[in-house]
Image (cartoon, rainbow, N blue to C red):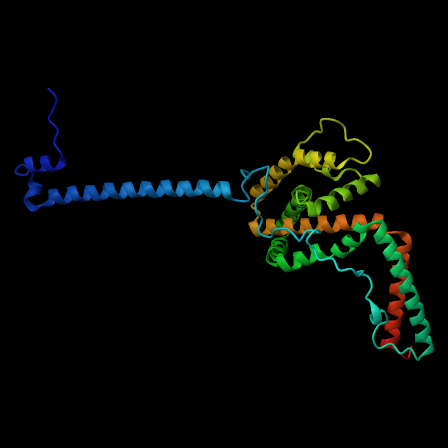
Length: 332
């Protein structure tokens, strides 16, 4: 025969006379204490479950997590510089002023020496203007890239100051062993970021032409493809030997697309293993963007600027310095 079940209240009432505790009301207090303890345990479990859910959400949303999506980068705090397509492009050259400003202010043309130099300066300026007009007509991108040359560095200094300061503090700790370790961490991360940002920035039409053209020019100069320099680190073996010659835009895109998830995985592994703070990671990435865009512009200008235009600019600058020295030190 199955024993009859009673609730705690009924059992207490049935045994009230037999329980010495009930005489003083202690039994009811014990029941109430058990109820409160059960409620507290239940609430504790609720809190544990909520914290676990929040941790899971944070893990998937953290920019330092290796679970970050491989196909699309996270929205970085520092963002990216203005692209070439949205940068204002004045019609004058960044290398010379216009009109009366051709001759530095304060130069007296009544002095024969200054007058002769000023005439040479004006003649060189006219030749320079003609040479620039011809060069820009043949290669319109030359003028645009000259004007864009300082935009990434200005973006870095104006928008990424706190991240760069965090990177400086991270690398300037007093412990010599820790400094060496952090310098090695930077050397590991910086090339990987420099490669990954090329893929990310080339998705913007304002950057695509510059970045891919720079890589083509590098290979025209018989430089090895930059995307292969980290293949050993990421454990990537090309399915076919790297071809010599200048690849097409499509080939370059494919090479970066194939390696990009591996670069991101390696970046995340280093960040998590070395416990690199998020603002330091942002600083490294921002420097990589500046370095990549400025380097691409410099590569294009170095290859595409006509030698005669380069020589005229140097001559123009030397004459300007001479005139300024005559103004500041007239006795010499």
